[in-house]
Image (cartoon, rainbow, N blue to C red; front, top):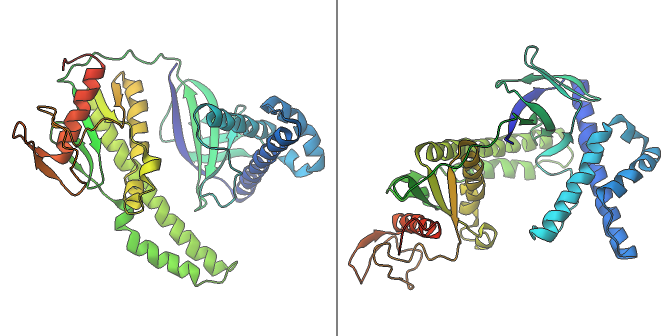
Length: 371
């Protein structure tokens, strides 16, 4: 089963914007209420409430808060399901205990599991209890409509992301060899360095906009809280942050598509990004690069096109090990960009050597080359 998400821009009317805001606020309320109920139940009775238990309490809650009746009931039930998934990730994947949702989050959203329609001829999406909303349906799709997610950014722009099951099976993974595999080493100076020797420059969108960001942030600090001028200043800052995010996404989509298109297999290193962000000297540069989202794009695109993403553990000394003789230069520091192997006298570019080693380790794990 191949699932693909299609994202479209929405242009709701004034009344529809109000309804969307009600859905967002009500769904956030239900999520926080459900989280509170689960915490109280465990602390007082020592048992955990399932999403079905919480859904059975919703009718009574609607009697207490009548404004919840104005919202699509399935969207409310979807929040208890989301909370259940968050607890599953907490226990199984150690992703962190679920937090209460805040209205200050940059992106607010709610889900529509079913009973919505998409009309490509009229360019409208009909949502339950909201009505027909104008949309820019720039890409057609065919298949079974799954869950749709309506989101609103901090700048007030609305989007809908529609998950579609096209009924096709994922293609079988293509065979690959050492010649059709490329190693990728992500970094700060260069966004990515390939085992072929190619270096992809890091566009550093955040760093390039930092001067303007500081100006806009200073303007906000000088405005009176709650004033319309402060809101205008906040909107300008949010638009710049949104632009930076969109630039980064577009760049990563282009690079990931290029790598998937040109190779049968891509070898990448599993990095502990959260741990690396604790280095305050490099945290901003690491966040600006967006390594995790880049690898995620490689992963799902590889699945779409039958390509292979090979992952190696972060414990492998890919940077400090000579890719020719295997000598480990354990004393090499971060400022050393080029070095010569004392054993085989091979001169190495630090990042290219790492990319070659990543490819080599990944192929060894697949038993395609013999050490």
